[in-house]
Structures are given as structure tokens and as C-alpha cells.
Amino acid sequence: MDETSDEPPTSAVILDSGCFSQVIFNNVEKCYAPGGDVTCHYTLTHNIVPRGKDWVGIFRVGWKTTREYYTFMWAPQPSDVHGNTAVQQQIQFKAYYLPKDDEYYQFCYIDQDGMIRGASVPFQFRAETEDDILVVTTQGEVEEIEQQNKNLLKENEELQANCASLQKQNTDLQEDLKKTQELQNVLEFLRSSTEKMELELNSLKKENKHLKELNECREAELHQFKEQIQNVTSEKEHLETRLKTTLDHVDQLQSQLLSYEKEIEDLVHSDHDKTKQCESLKEENNQLCMTITQKEEQKKELKHCLEHLKGTEANLTLQLQNEQQQNKDLMKELEEQRCLFQTLKAKKKESDEENQKLRKENDSLLRRLSQPRDVSSSSVVSQAQALAPAPEDFVFGNPYHDAGANWKARATGIDSIRKCPICNDIFPDDIEARDYEAHVQSHLLECPVCNEAFEKSNQQVFDDHMLCHSLERF
Picture 1 (cartoon, rainbow, N blue to C red):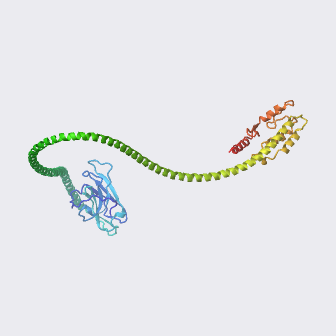
Picture 2 (picture 1 turned 135 degrees about the horizontal axis):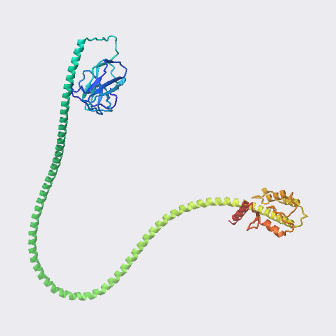
Picture 3 (picture 1 turned 180 degrees about the vertical axis):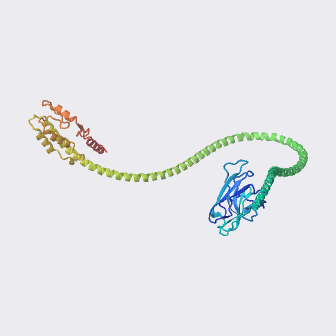
């Protein structure tokens, strides 16, 4: 029946009606239509201080404790609260949470301590019928009602006074309760301290008992030590008597010792020689031990080297297998490169032969250019074009094909033969042949290996030609 998940603060104590006048419910209808929302209007008097957990509940008439609510809503906090003024508040109950029967119910205001501070007149949840009777009261009845209201107001004032005294008693009791709680805390602290002291006392008693046992053990040990001292003194006296007898015996032995010393001197001389022999044998033995230890160390080092060599041998075998596989791959690539080189070499040989032909033709052209002007330009150009091979016959193209085309295009409008076939510069008739040839050679690139000439504008052809020479070296 609750509209929220939190339970409101309630009390199981059966309450009296002494504090019900602190909250007054206004405009409470006799009947509320079922299936609709209900708005509850109430007034907070100056005798109550609203708090965050106050709530308004709907109770069935005949309830005994605040736990018997049907539904509830949290009371909103007023925005402006003054000590001596009443505050009008309202709260709306949704139809879903309202009762569905026609029993009598009433609104009750409960504070966060679970105490009821106000209750409304009973009402029902039912539709109004035509049977409702309109009651008409006379003037006398009105006066009686007013008199009853005055009496009720007096009773209300008396109840408020009683409430104030009860509140004062409540505050006094709360202060006493706080004092008793403080005393209980002190008492609990004293109890805990006494328990600690009792534990410490028990531990001290155990230690005292242990020390007494140790003292008894020490006394028993002391008694044993005394008995041992008596035994030692008796033994000492016995040993003193024996010492005297031994001293006499020593004197006799000294006399015998002198005779033995003489015999020992003779033996010492003979023993001296034997010691020398023993020392020499010891030195030889030490040298043999040293050589044996050195050989053992060498043996260990050889074992370590052998293990290391085995590991390196395994690594080298793996590397050798990898290198053999790489060599196989490289040999395949080398064979492919050799085949490619052979094809390039054959093409280069063909291009060299063609270039030799072109050089010869170029030399013949240069000679003819150096001859008198009676030779027409058109005949020279036609001969050069007839002798020059097609550009597709070369691996890298014919560098002189474009030049021949230029000669043909430019020879139609110029009568003089003294014209550069590359830059189209025109020279006078009296220029020497070697100057003209030097000018033409300045536009050419000459291979330092085979002395083959290429036009400078065909730099890529010259670079490819030099690459062929570099491949021939490999």
C-alpha cells in the first residue's frame, strides 16, 4: 500500500488524543469519489516544528497504533516557517493507492518520531447518492453549536498547555536520557578497563607462578652444585695423595731418563739421516700431488671445453644447415641473374654492333659535312635516314633517331649544310671542319669503356649503357 520503497517512522504505542490539535485538517469532504485523486489540505500550527521524515497517512477508523496506516505520503517541507504563524499545506494522494471499500477513514499527520500530531474527521470513498438528506438547523441549535465550539476551544487551549508542559517534560527526560547514556558509556568504559586489568592481573599471576617454579628449580640446582663441590674436594684430597706418589715415581723416571737420553742422542744421529731422506721423499710426493691436481684441473677444463664445443657444434650445424639453404636460394637467384645477364649481354653485343655501324655512318656524315657546299642538305638527310636503323632495333632506343628527324625537318628551309644537327646553330661557310666537329661533340656523352657516343639529352640511355658495363664486370 506504500507509494515509496522507504517505510515511514511508526510507533507500536497506543496513543491518546493529547497532541492531535498541532495539525488541523481543512476542507475534509464527507465522501470522496472512488477512482479519483484526493487532495488533503491541512494547517501546521505554531506548536509543531516540521521535520524531513514527517508524513501524512490514511487510517481506517478504529486504528490503535501508527503502524495500521493504509497508505501514506511524505509531508512536504514548508518554504517559509515562522515561530508564531500557521502554515497552510496540501498533499495529493493518487487514486491507485486509495482504498476501494466504503469504510470510514481519516487523515493523520505523524512526525518522524512516529507520534500523531493531528487527525481529521472521518470520511468515505463512495459516490454521493440522492438519499443524502439536507439538514436544516434552527437558531437555537446554532447557538448550542457555537457554545460547544467555545468549549472545544477552551479544551484545545488546555490541551495545548498540557502539550507544552509535556514537551517540557519530554525535553527534561531527553536530557536525563542523554546523561544516563553518558553514564552508561562511562560504565562500559570502566567495565572494559576492569576486564583489561583482570586480564593483566591473570597474566601477572601466571608469571609469578612461573617464577616460583623457576626459583624452586634454581634451589634444586644449587643443592646439586653443593653436593658436587663436596665430591670435588674429596677427589682433590685423593689426587694430592696420588700426586705425591707420582712425584716419587717421577724422580725415579728422571734417573732412567738420563740413561735414555744418551741412547736417544745416538739414535738422533741415525734418525737425522733418515729425516733428510724423508724430506726429499716428501718433496717428491708434494710435486707429484701438484702435478696430479694440475692434471685434474686440466681434465675438468677439457671436459668443460668439450661440452662447450658440443654446444657450439650443435649451433654451428644449425647455422650450417641454414646457410646451406640460403646458399641454395642464392645459387638459384645467381642462375637467374646469369641467365638475365647472358640475355642482356647478347642484346648489348647486338646494340654495340649497331652502335659501331652508327659511329661509322656518323663519321662518314661528318666527313661529308666538312666537304664543299655543293652537296645538298636533302641528300645528306635522306642518306642518314636510309642508313640509320629503326629505334625499335636497339635495347635502349636509337639516340640519333630524333636528331635525324630534326635534320629532316630543318633542312627544307635552310640552304647551308653548316648547321648543328642537335642545337640547330648555323655556322658561316668559312668555319673549319674541326671547330664544327668540336661543337657537335660538345652535345654528346662518350662512354669511358667502349668510347661510344650518346646525346646529352638521352641521359637515361647513357646510364643504362654504363649499367651494362658494370654487370659485365661481375
